Image (cartoon, rainbow over all chains, first blue to last red):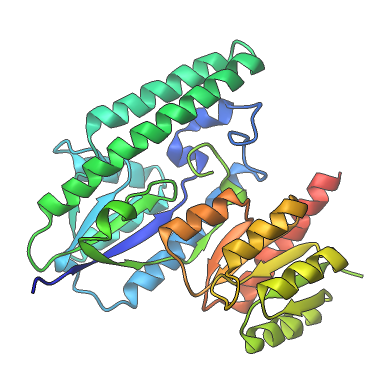
Amino acid sequence: MSDIKSLIYVPVLHTQKEAGEILLSLKGDDAARPADTSLAEQEKSIKEMWDGIYKKIQVMNISYPLIRIYQDALPVCGREKEIVEKLAQKVSRNHQLILELLKKGAKLEGTEDPDLLIKEYDNLSQLISKASVSIQSYKDSLNEYKDKAVKLMKQRDAFIAERIKSTLKEDETPLVFMGVRHELEKLLQRSFVINYIIYRLPFKKVRDIYNV
Amino acid sequence: MKDKILVIDDEKDICELFKKILGLEGYTVLTAQNGYDGIKINEKSNPDIIILDLKMPKMNGIETLRRIRKKDADVIVIILTGYGDAGTIRNAADLNVYEYMAKPFNNTTIIKIIKEAVASMGEKDE
């Protein structure tokens, strides 16, 4: 009988800043509407979310050297740690927490297909360029963007699932930080027992196109 | 009179705790221990905020919220649950929840979230 490994899954929300400040320019549609609160308030809520997650990880009594971290939007590129360090310097609590886990001995793994991430960026850039033409043009493009994003997300999730399965070493446990809109768990639940870490998800405070 | 809050949770102790802590803050607290009663109380009493558990017998929290949303698109809903997976979180997000919070919870944090939610209602009214 084969042992089913456990996987720690942390569904997260991104701030607009983390998702790219360009999102701030999106207006005219409910799904893309800037959050009800200021950026400072968003960041405060998201910081609380990460602090809560970190506390929950700390009480799990896990062996950090046996943890391999997989992070939403972190490309497989050979410069993964450098990217995390840069984002941590830009006050991303998400990436600061990863650095803290790395200091304790956890490993970091490139997670996403860079080509698919570039496609996502291109799709978003196209959408934003429409926003400057007219609200109607933007709304039409938003639906098109959403369709593309859903299809692309499926491809991204398939890549991530395979990446986890192919890079995980024996005795290691994957720790996966993934935006709430990913459906990665559907591809992993047959291979892993998934344990969730959830503290709080302040949806209304950080409403944006990536999260809702 | 401060705002009206409906707590839908099958754990009687949780309902009582909210009555106590939110009552001290001056809120009117209504409680229901299952989804059916929660839907009825929501329609009859029109609360400002609903605190909703997910894992309940007879009707789970997502189905309860789905039915509430058919008639009430705007009421602020805070999910408070000891149970959660990625699919449930997406379902809750699709049903326009204000916040998704895990049990066990800190009283100070939940009161802060409720106050923020109340304040956001004020901003919409202005």
